Image (cartoon, rainbow over all chains, first blue to last red):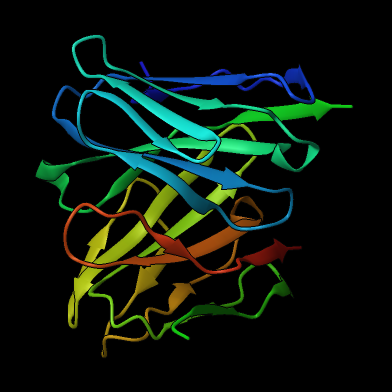
Length: 112
Length: 112
């Protein structure tokens, strides 16, 4: 079993809709969770991080964490064509001290 | 402004040659990391460092080495380049604690 599982997609949503990206992880020692966005040919950029169970909102983005179910998600409201990218889920286990483990990413396509 | 830079952006080399990829950060971050990114595998950790004179192997370290002689630089050396090392290489840095990485812009390496 991979440490981090993401559906590779592509996930296609119409402009203005809510995009829901999901990630499951196997390491119960995982402490901190991150969502990165990566445009084609570019480097990953951090868009959200979450440490506690529940929801965390930042503009059009909401991260949701459920440690009991080992599940983290990213919701993008009012999706725009500029949101079309690959979204990488990652986590840190404090036992591995600052070392991020990444999923393979979900490709999101926002259609006009 | 603080930044993390990688050089070169593109490199073509021959099988068996030694290659060094540069990574330089001005964030004054203690932690530095090298990842490779390949289709279907996502980001995989090669080597990492938590400070000067500290280096550690990641999950795909065979054929690679790093050295950390100062806070700013973590060069990645391919001892004898192989075609399997054709990839996009990303350097990243982070501060102490559980915060996400800042990535460099990447180096696309082709081994022919």
